[in-house]
Image 1 (cartoon, rainbow, N blue to C red):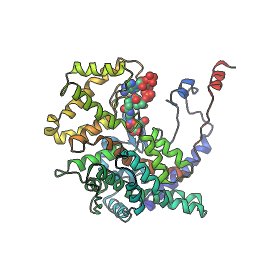
Image 2 (cartoon, protein in one colour):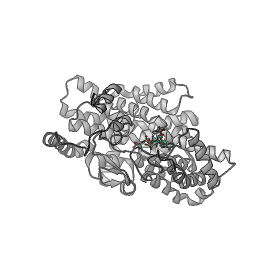
Image 3 (cartoon, protein in one colour):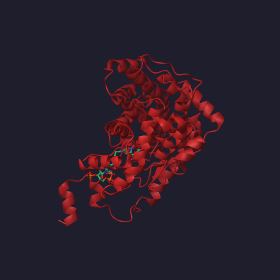
Image 4 (tube, rainbow, N blue to C red):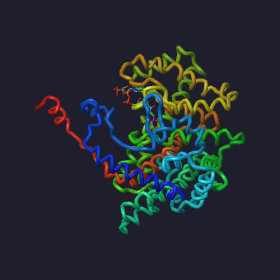
Length: 432
Ligand code: NMX
Ligand code: MLT
């Protein structure tokens, strides 16, 4: 059903993409030239990608399809399935649409057996991220796109094939993640998905986490939506887009995306943030004073360390997603007030921006999504921090699949900017 519903949006997107390219191809996009420092500082400020699934405003944060802010998205879409629909169909789904989408995903729930064999071949001690990347890459064998491409499928069909493969991955990824969780932190036995549940509920159910109040499930819905997309040029989505632009499969695209997320400057900052909070609690024998937090951060920065969960390459204010995720604590206020990790997280969140702002080189001293996401998870009974980036991955999956399907629908080419040598940069600057 989603393919039929998305078809008009895809057709319009393709027409628009080709028309904009034809009509405005020679229009200069930046007001001034690209400077040497733009290139040498990670292409900061240079348009490096294009997607309609979301835009990141430096102060307001993520806006799905360019108009649905994160807090509104959580309120109006409620579940990540609906956000995916929004990115694909350009309208929020009706209840009937959602029901049909859920049935479609349920019909795809059977994970190929060799995925479990691949998982079980890895030592349990392998980092959860490596387990996820490996199994995801192995599932490449299921790609219908690959076979159809080899059989000469027309390029106008690519997006449909990618969507079909993408829907399979959506139906499998939370199962793989839950199996990894149970393998490392549980009794190792997989729990079958319950088709009556939505995707987030299924994840919590399969992970075996205790959730009698339903708070963890409700938070996971907010979590998955909040992490689902962050325009085209964050490191993970960009990596996925490059890989997909080669016409590699959705499985390879996701696996590459996950590899990019595994670094501490990106997705692994959520694991590092909770580690840091625990370190502070440990060092001061409990929740510290403001002065102690200042001292801790100053010492960390003076020794060349980085404060995880703060700063951003694009945002210039507190990440709206940090606000949305930590606002969830209001629903468990009594527990949260007594929880040292939450109290310490809140204290650092209040104090750190002022301390970081005193270091002029730091462009954004504010909290990003990763500083709060894990602390809330730990308060809700999921304290296994080296699993947190897996949760980021299976959230980002939604946006990366939507971006890839749309890109193939629009007929985007392979991504391949030019590269310069240092001598060329020097010559360009000195007129040599
Ligand atoms: N703690 C210490 N130093 C920082 C921080 C921070 N939180 N943020 C930036 N800086 C430093 C940065 O390392 C750089 O130093 P140097 O020139 O010596 O290499 C300098 O300030 C200028 O960096 P910016 O231009 O402010 O930031 P940039 O755009 O290069 O990097 C991040 C953005 C997110 C990589 C950076 O802020 C950071 O490392 N933050 C901590 C890790 C983190 O929370 N990452 C998650 C981001 C969100 N996500 O989910 O991916
Ligand atoms: C993300 O969600 O991808 C991160 O905030 C990083 C980014 O946008 O650069």
